[in-house]
Length: 187
Image 1 (tube, helix red, strand yellow):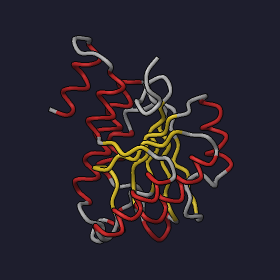
Image 2: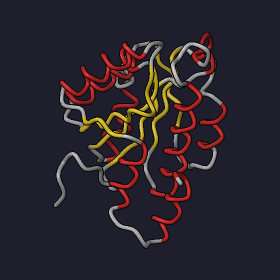
Image 3: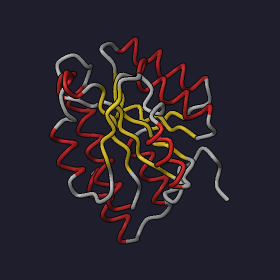
Image 4: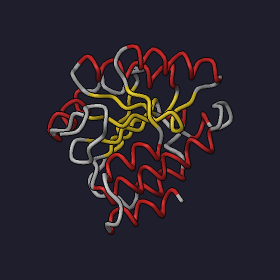
């Protein structure tokens, strides 16, 4: 048995919050964040992880950015969830999807850390999910707001992680074909 703060691929879901085109010019490190999330999506395909993608008012804020959408195209069986509430876990369809998956660890990414990601994390934690906030795959309009959001999530019981930490925790060991495929994404 592994420590509960270590991700297991049979227990994990990738959750992407509101990485939409209209935010590109306003979010600190947006291109780096989008590239890291695309890497996580590609790894999710290899590791057979379910993926949840939310879009906040896409009519006004645009669709999920192309670098993530193109990575998502390789996946089967995921859906975009349009939302108007800040929390990505307020939609009954998302709750039902996550409950039906039987998985209790959520790899949380997206924007903004102190608004939608923060409220999503708190709602997930309240419902008994283990939230792993991927610090190099979340951001806000300022570093200060990113730090505040991350601190609130950690104080509520969330686990801070990185893209590579999350992936290598789920891989468990080297030398497998799965390891080699995922390693190519991060090296």
